[in-house]
Image (spheres, one colour):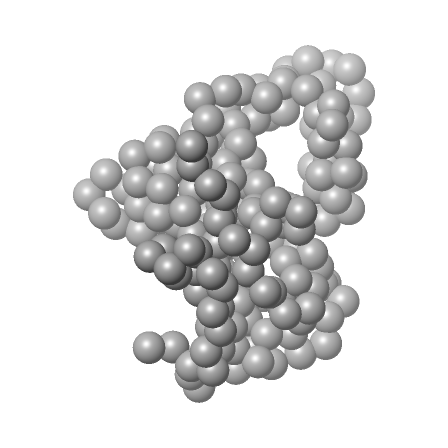
Amino acid sequence: MTSSPAALAIPAEIEAVFRAFLTCEFSTLAKDGTPITWPTLPFWDTASQRFVVTTSIGFPQKAYNVRRDGRVSLLFSEPKASGLERPPAVLVQGDATAPDEIVTSFTGNEDALRQTFERQPSGMIFSANPLIRYFSDWYYMRLLIYVTPRRILWWPDGDMTGEPRRIERLAAEGMEGQEASHAS
């Protein structure tokens, strides 16, 4: 039986970034190991301490890459429209899974759908009327990607010129969260 990772002690200022930023840069690894980065809308689930990222079945490359190599990162560096004043820049390095399942219903995920339309109101055009919904059904068929943070680095006030602060899961020592004032 596999145990779930111990909870990380994530500072409130970092959780605020996870909740308030409209997008982040999500990076996966291609077949040859090249990092590929997309802007994406992540959803932070405090209870499970993981992110949920979705992608349309029409654009499955993120999920394919994760299934091949689960090492991913999320960079929260652009605070525009977040409502946060001088937030830290945050880099999450984690382990991702992408189940081989297509989600076709938002039942149980209504909060995420509401957040999507709040953050990206132009996306409402795909649900504006029945005809558009019919021709855009592929957009609503989603693949889910779950990201469990392994390491979180952050730079106070978004100033990435200095050493970052860090929280890390230690795989060999019971997955306890550790924080250090700088990267090693």
